[in-house]
Amino acid sequence: MRLLIKGGTVIDPAAGIKEKADVLIQGEKVAAVEKKIRRPAGAEEIKADGCLVVPGLIDMHVHLREPGYEYKETIATGTAAAAAGGFTAVACMPNTNPVCDQPTVVEYILRRAEAAGFCRVYPIGAITKGQEGRELAEMGQMKEAGAVAVSDDGRPVADARIMRLAMEYSRAFDLPVISHCEDPNLAAEGVMHEGYWSTVLGLRGMPAAAEEVMVARDLILAEVTGARLHIAHVSTARSVDLIRAAKARGVQVTAEVTPHHLYLTDAAVQEYDPDTKVNPPLRTEADVRALRKALADGTIDVIATDHAPHAPEEKKREYNYAPFGMVGLETALPLMAGLVREGVLTWEQLVEKMSVNPARILKVPGGTLVPGTTADITIIDPEAEKVVDPEKFYSRGRNTPFRGWKLKGWPKVTIKGGRIIMIEGRIV
Ligand code: DOR
Image 1 (cartoon, protein in one colour):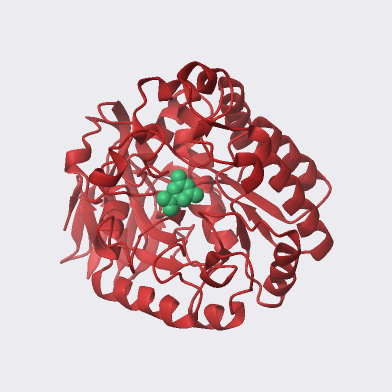
Image 2 (cartoon, helix red, strand yellow; image 1 turned 90 degrees about the horizontal axis):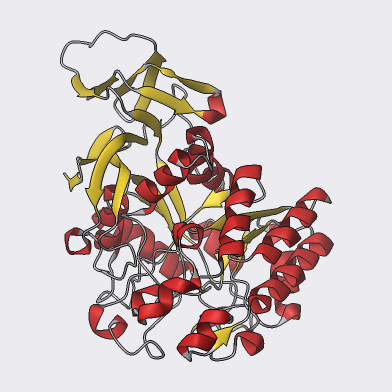
């Protein structure tokens, strides 16, 4: 099958391209990127005038919930949500039931993704057995089965000795260690950021330091072990400073930030809406400013959603009892397009942080459109405007604080391996 994407602006930062060009796809591969390509006989044409044609977006931090929590999300619904949001690949966190801490679970996820998935799925294995923080999981076997990283995300690795060991082993298998940085004793039973608003609202706070002391610890451990460390969902200004300093002295660290931490502050908790409850919590305006700056100056490498679907009946509870997490796959791109319009990021940087860098960090295919590579492509309409309506999500989760927001810059077409998976918001 041949597909011609005509009239769009191709942005391929890895190849140094940002220009109006046509893209020809032949079978599963990109066949040509040239100024003007005549439609070969029998080829299907996609008109992309006014649109951006970019390497398929990759979200390196999602919770697909399968196996075990299919009432929240399945691999089918989560990957449909991903494709609807313009993503051609996701990496999924191991806090499933059973925990993804052994090769059989990695294989199960890959098989389910093959059968039911609308985008590529890269499983992330647990650092410790059962994510209990006590005994290392079998990294080598999980890698052999297809795991692309290790993480106990959802929970911190509280024991520094275990984290050190994990980093030492991770080197042998060339796996990045993705750290959920949270000191459980400092975070205690907090349900939001500790500060002005937690005091006003009478809710238990988690201090910024709960994240920062763990960021500092893990940066030191990465420095002494030489491991590749990736810090998940960075949310505070001091975490950013620590990462910036570590990068300057050559520590192998990368970092990600979520769209919600770039847009919302703890003031959003005012109405006690459980959809604003997330871990790490929404922080202060100064933190948001620091995160935006860090994204722009390269201290933060990746934008990842931490897509965390929950069932309405468990999320719609009193703030203290609702689970942490918000869905993100179907709103991430238009939110980040907003940052481009605000002048925080360029489109090239957006593509770097949502495609090039995740591919590089996880060492998975993608992140470029050079001829010969697999045709995973996202077409973005920067002028398309739509109001966020969670009832129309493909995800089973409806838990978004962006309900009713009018956003501009939506994905128009998602192409995986040369096949159209989503067009104008509809999965095909
Ligand atoms: O808010 C969150 N929800 N943060 C996490 O780290 C885990 C996630 C989940 O699995 O629900």
